[in-house]
Image 1 (cartoon, rainbow, N blue to C red):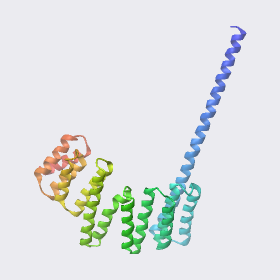
Image 2: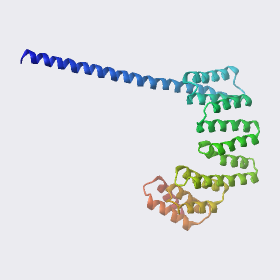
Image 3: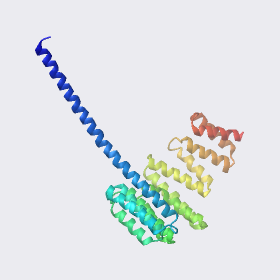
Image 4: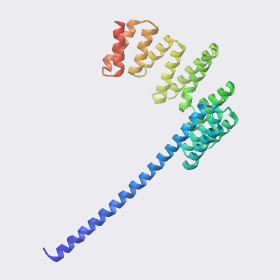
Length: 293
């Protein structure tokens, strides 16, 4: 082999080695950067977890904890806010947790001031605003001011209807009256719940929101123990789309347990087994069917 050929091969080897070193350095740098990000988030999650542990004691035993324990929990959340940045979700949740601790100590004005500050810090974030408003309503409720609490809850329904909190409020209000034994107010609230969710289902047909709203209508009728209304509503859903096994199982249980219509109950269970033979619901339907026989 000629000297020129050997020299060229050595040069190519050096070039390849240089490229490999460069790529290795780039990979190492990327791993370091990614690892740093993950490490920072892990550290923040750990700090928030430590603050949560301290807050849990304060909230559950508000009348028994010392000022030191309360101040320590607040300081931990303030550290979260400082390190995470005021615009982060970590900081927002930390603010709400501090407010909740003040509420547990019955310092409701301080709690609501912090909740209002959190709300004002997140314009456009409907999910976070609704979360803070719901906690604000709870402070009024704990204080014994149900009228103000309901006003806040209805504000969520009117202004932030697409949030998780809005989906829970109609039944929450009805259950409040039912728990207090106010049957008239409970009846009105349950009716309002049915109407609210029916409006959502009609407004957004064939969407996830519509399915959720229709399920809430069924749940409301069940809590009201209006079994015929529940059955009629479920049956009319089938004119719109194919019912799933879970909804059909609820229908079968109503026929079986509440209306004592074993013929329709059996037909419903058999339909589930035939259509979804390997599903978890089919196993429950088989058990129910065996009990009918």
